[in-house]
Structures are given as structure tokens and as C-alpha cells.
Length: 520
Image (cartoon, rainbow, N blue to C red; front, side, top):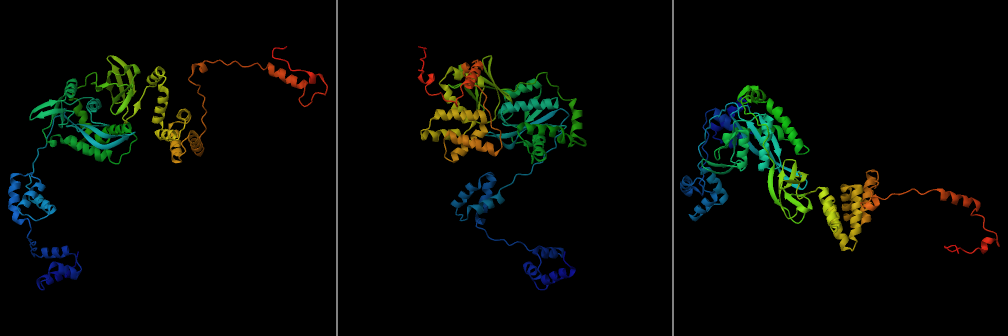
């Protein structure tokens, strides 16, 4: 605020002396905006902005006519056209001019859509960044289903947006609601709509099977009309801000446990947008009686895939290899994958079951499969040992390469590293190999030295190897304790002839000849 006297001085300098705004502001040490405000309050009209001639002015009419006929024409193409007509300006300035002259579509007004209880739910995927799983960087996708009337929300995270995860999201959401709405609204995503031409829609067959099982109607929104499923869009934004922002979690299971607690807690306790006097939980309680009941058995959501087995006993599924019995190589098998398990069948026979891995290039093995192959092919033992070292300690490959170049015996190095792996573990062996490579000491003694050095630094108890060899001749060997009677006889004989008393010269002992083993 400035004083009345200063306002009077500003008006005097403007009217009597004819000073411009900039001069008044400089001389009175005021901001030019303050001077303009005082003049505007006194009724002084603001000066019109100076209109400067522009290089584009002669071409303005041509630009407007072209944009009226082709509203989405790119500025780069329009720039080429005016350059051919003699425009000498730069493309950056021309692009800014086109942005001002391009016609804007009229703003569209939307009706607020209201639904009946239990009538509709809305479904969508949302991308929440990526999650590191071993060597794989997986997309973190959120499956969101919201009931349109009560706004009750289901949120669960998956490591992909495949059809299997899409179906599992539905089944788990219905179990969470303990019911199902009559209509589910989708965007035109490939998991729901395979093909669309106007009103002709071809749904994904697995989605139609799911809809038939739970008796709901799938319904896609119109193309480029995301406002028709605004409830799930706003719920996703709410989940980003109120749940996911600045949240820490250990793994995917921990994140989903926190998401479930959020759905039944904060998300359910917020005021319902349709009735601000009640919470979402209270409105959902009244809506539940109108929702569709669930069938006795949930819909099967296992991913089904036919795979070819090569000459090694592994099947490739979702970037990883899973072992199978070796007599199933060179055959076509079927993979049934759930969220946590991978089953492999040959016809009607279940031949392998593994825990599912979301790593990349990992080998998930059943030890029985590998042991059967090794016993079947004895020559595979050496390769199997090096393969085990490679997966347990990735730096072992570089150690073998350097040691081989220096003429070391790789068999002895392999056996020694396997013993260290069995007694000290993969982490200690990998760290010791890295230290040996850093010192360019590529031999077994150096690896043992660094393992012992790290163990002493961490005050670890030295491991004791008590495992017997795998040779059945050793494991079935019976050891009988030796009788100590012979040692007693030796002790008495030593007492009769003390070793400190040498025999007298000329005694019979000097003339005794040694007896032959046969006693002759």
C-alpha cells in the first residue's frame, strides 16, 4: 500500500508533466504495476499495446483459410507451403503463430451420469511404474474395479496386464465384493475387445466365458469417450495420490496386502460422492443386497500354453526355463500357470510342478529331474557342476576363462569351488571370486584365502563339512572298532625291555639273525 500523498504525486506527474508509466516508476522507486493500478483507479485508460508488423502478416489470410479446411494440418507442412510462397521467417516463430491461429474445438458439456444400485461396475488397468525382480524389470500394473453406485473399490497389483492377470483380477474382485454387478464397463483394451467396427464388437472369448460364469454383461465404452467410465478414472487418480504416493513395500505380496487394507479402510471410509452424508462402506452395505450372487466354484484363471521341449529338459514360459523329466524332450507339452504355480502336463499326466518365477532367464529346477538326467548320462556331471557354479556365482565364468588361459586344471578348480559352495554358500563364494579377480589371482587358493578373510572380518564360525560322499560303497561301509588288547601287549613288552637300556656286548641278542617271514 502507498500513501495518499504518493498517489497524488503519481497523478500529477502523469497529467501535468506527461510522464509515462516507466518514468514515474523509476523516479518514485515504485513497481510499474503499482503505477498502473493507481492510474486505473483514477479512470485513466490503459494505453493500447503497440502493434508491430510481423513477417507472417502477408500470409495470415492463407494460413487461416488452410487451417479452416484442414484443422489438424501439422505446422511443419504449413511452414513448407508458406516458404514456397515466399515466407522468409524461421520455423520456430512460425510454429508459435500457427498455434495461436489454429481453430479450437468448442468446449463440450457433459451430463452427470447416475446409476442404480448394483447396476454397473467399471474396470480398467493403470500403470504404476516398474518393479525389479532379479534380472527382470517388470511393469507394475494395477487392476481397478469400482462399483458405480457406492464407489466401493477393489485394487490389486500384477506384474503384467496379460489375459490371465485380467481374469484373476475379476475373480478376486468378485470375491472381495462377495457379489457381482449386472454390467461391467470397459475401455476398448485388447483383453476385452479384440475388434470393433462401429457398433459391431468382437469380445475376447475368455471374457465371454467369464461373463457367462458370473452372469454379468460386458459393455465397452464408445471409442475415445473415456468420460463414460469416469468413476474408475477418478478412482485410479485417488489411488495414486492417497495410496501409492511415497509408499514403501518389500515385494508384490506386501504391496497387495497394503492395497487390500487400504480398500477396506481409507477407501471405504471416505464420503460417498452420491450421498455425502454416508460413507462408501455404508452405501455398499445397502447396495450388496441387490448385487448378483456368486457361483459355487470360482472361474478357472490358469494361463494355458502349448510349448515345445528342445533337446534340453526345460520348457520356456514367461522369460524363464522350467525343468521337466528328461524322457519328455522333443515333445509338445502344456503349461498351466497360476499366479504362484507353474504346472506342466503331458496329455492327462502331470509331470512337473514349480513355483512361478517373475525373474528373467532363470532356471527353475526340480532336483529329481536333474539327478535322473545326470545318472542317465554320466558325462553330464562336469558340465552340470560348472552350470551350478555359474548360476550360484556368476563371476565363476570369468574365473574359469582366466584360469584356462593360464593352463590351470579346470577339473580341480571346479571340484574345489563346489566344496566351497557347499560349505560357505553362494554369497560368500561370489564375493571371494570377485576379490580374487580384482587381484588377478585366478586360482583356488586365492578364493579360499578371501573366503577365510571375509569370515574372520565378520567373526563367522568356520563351517564343518560332515557330508559323506555320494558313493554308495562309502555310505554302506561298516567300520568295526579294533581291539585294544594288542596295544596292552605292546605296553607290557616295553616295560620289560626299556628302550633306554642297550643290550650288553656279547649277548645273545647280538648274534640273533633276523627271522624270515616264513619262520625258517
